[in-house]
Length: 323
Length: 134
Ligand SMILES: Nc1nc2c(ncn2[C@@H]2O[C@H](COP(=O)(O)OP(=O)(O)OP(=O)(O)O)[C@@H](O)[C@H]2O)c(=O)[nH]1
Ligand SMILES: [Mg+2]
Image (cartoon, rainbow over all chains, first blue to last red; front, side, top):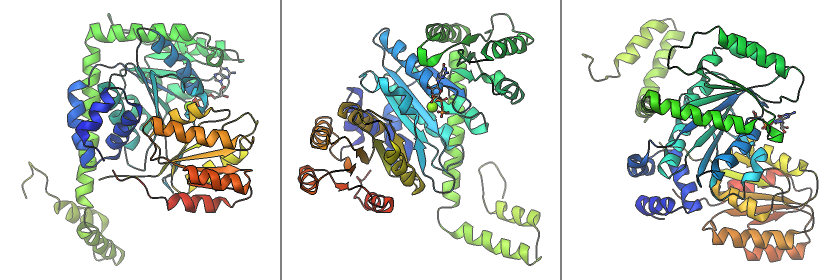
């Protein structure tokens, strides 16, 4: 077993197995994570993180397959891809299949793909994605493309770790309307109607355009563009790349790049603190057994839920609270 | 708080056209609580090893029907060594004669399963593999 310093040095030198190991250790937690975060930290903050979100089967992986090659072709960039999927809450297991649509990237030595699952932690998806993206950033990958399936709160939190969010929509599924209701258009910087070869694509594009149009764009603000792609044929992808580059320039000149980086770190920190506190809370069974006693009391009507919660939370002392 | 979970890459090299077997194994491993990375059909040994290294998996499960096992497995072993990933355990399944199985296991394949092996045997075998310490 090598020290964290040795491992980090080999990863910086581009050794793929060491990069893979660093990502695992950072994701897993524990003392090795702490050591690596200290080593990685001075090198972070450069990469452009691009979130690619959208409903299941929208073509996110297919599009990323196309995007990554184009980014890598220019400037000899090293491109990172993080593909996240939820794990089963019952077993904790996960089937991560995004690589199937990215197989053309396997032989590419400047594209590094990592699949992640939640591992059952609250906020786990977002935290793990952020940590892995941080590590990729520190190891020189730029841009970093982050795929997340679904459009719920957990996925929105993943997108809060990105500087730019591309939202994919799928024609003929009523998606457009639903996503607007879910407030997803608000987080999107770029809208992509994929499967433009299908019926209803144009109509969906028009619908989304008009929805966006009704929203005022302040001066110097970013007007969210709507693009049409046929990802598996690579059509319209150059335009997506171009818009992503423009968005980066806009972020950098408007000060938003730094603002979004800070917001992402803040969320990251919040999630790490929550994990640390919960770990301390459940560390030994002390608190658990007191909780069980209170539960028994509630069941026997000796106390009620509200009183039990107060009694339990009073046992936890946080700084800044009188005891 | 260290959260470890067995990570397995399921691969299907060769030209034969269906991956039902690979998908059955992938689902069984997932249901057993593992993180399974599925890479699809027609992978070359180079692709498989590259993906295994990037995903930092503990186990590589290879399903092979095409009869190319005597070239595919040795090539995978060689590439894993070259890329500093010889800790990855290889398990395989397919139509492989006993003599070939013994030879491949001597070369470093952890275990080969013949057709019709119960998936729970594969799951149990992978569960009991000695994993690398963090
Ligand atoms: N007709 C059509 N099919 C497409 C297009 N792009 C992708 N597909 C197909 O859509 C299916 C899903 O593509 P993926 O890239 O796996 O979609 P995804 O959004 O990553 O899916 P999940 O990760 O499972 O949510 C595949 O069969 C693709 O070949 C397109 O532009 N047109
Ligand atoms: Mg996908």
